[in-house]
Image 1: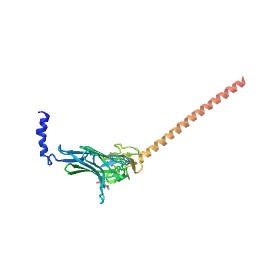
Image 2: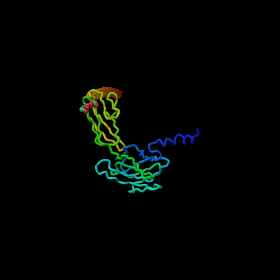
Image 3: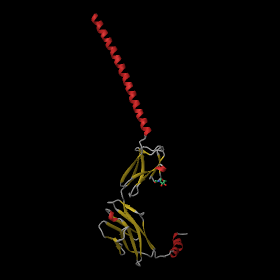
Image 4: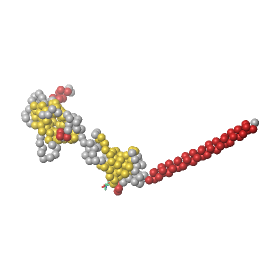
Length: 272
Ligand SMILES: *[C@@H]1O[C@H](CO)[C@@H](O)[C@H](O)[C@H]1NC(C)=O
């Protein structure tokens, strides 16, 4: 079966079966919500416009509203009117590019004031409008890291306040967590401690694209290990001293013997 025939007789009727037939327009923002933007960088939102073969876009508008708060003042950022869809931004930092199937909004030098709910509205040739929304927030640094202990479950829980996409990792005495120390949960926030008794310093590090912050839980010092090390050091020092003493004694004895020998020679020389 040739493709054209297939399209004409099989696909075309599908349009008629669709709820809005050939006159159906939709717009969808392609970026995953919520979009987080690092202050000073650029925000870019892309939207796809879908419409039937008999449809056309007569106007595209980008706007922003506050995400929360009663005063949901709507700020128009750019409009792209007419057949040519030539866009005009309301601020120099706003760039919009629109074609029949796609529209792109770019905001340079993003700041906190640019956060909110972004809306792209597409108007078709009959004047009907359809809108898509997308939440945009500032990318926040990691804040207020803390570690608390859950005594009943022998676990340490790491908390963080409002950083974007925090990733958690743990250290015990500045080394990675080994199996003898404990096990970190899948999301990284909890360390189930298997060592008994719990001792030493447990550090939780939380990081994201803007940097990291850490907090430490200090348990009792690791006693046995500490005592063992001290004993070993004392032993070593004692052995070294002993060895040094023996060596010094041997050298001294040898020196004295040599001296006596020389004196004997001298004496003999004198008598000859
Ligand atoms: C300790 O952890 C368990 C299990 O995760 C939890 O159910 C419990 O509420 C925690 N206790 C405290 C005091 O946080």
